[in-house]
Image 1 (cartoon, rainbow, N blue to C red):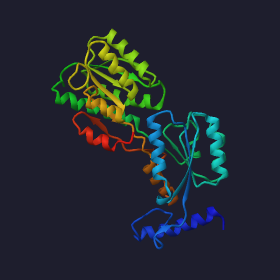
Image 2: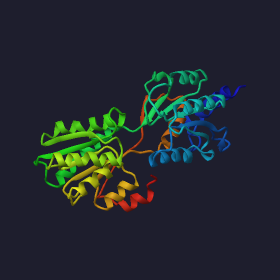
Image 3: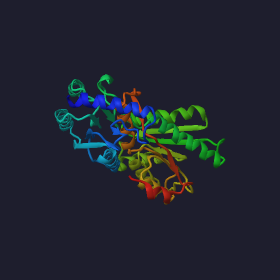
Image 4: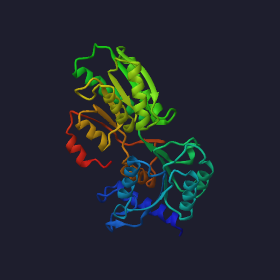
Length: 336
């Protein structure tokens, strides 16, 4: 009996035990009678590259979740931001007959041929983080952040904050330092936030310009905003580095920011550096962009292994942080 057929029959048998309530662990490769895993689910993970703290935390989350004690074997390949290297890794996963492939693509296009090869090998693919512009029948689902929801969360936070400050009737002048134009994060974060403008006619968006996701450019853009507009109340920076650049530009212009300052600063990411900036009183709030995909990927694999159908889009859980929270406690558990 070949490996794939054996696993299919075994998963079906274990699923029956799960449905009738045998045992506490409900992973489809877990033998509830023997109290052990009958086999390890092999996962090939092609990571795009290690270029940021976020990506490092993303990789570590999979490495710490997809372990033997949880019924997995993880094969990790880092593409170093090279698509050809990534495609080569995917073909190696096929040769090794892995059970699942997780792909964090470095670009959106150029995956059609290799994904068809993987589909012919009957290996399910989970796309994470960056989307791809290919036929969605070639992969099981995409997992990432709900950027539109993040944008709405930032707007909801601002609305509540202004209400607490008794500024709901005041004209509020906003600027946005956007991420790289056309990326999913930039498009959806901007869209999610801008919907709140319609509900708050006293909110005026003075200017929006890309900061290219860099601290240097973010600082330059904020400096330009400050030269052009003397009445800025709020700046939304669509990533953490641009927020830090904006804070420097505000200080250089002789203004202040944060809860006791002239300008409200909101960012996206909510990593340790941003929590520290909140503690320092320079940043008001940060909407989380959660890199800890490991548990959600394990959940998706177990559902697929048990024959459960999934929505094509899957999202990680995310929240926001601000200066009213216990940031010291948050920093003790923050992994990125």
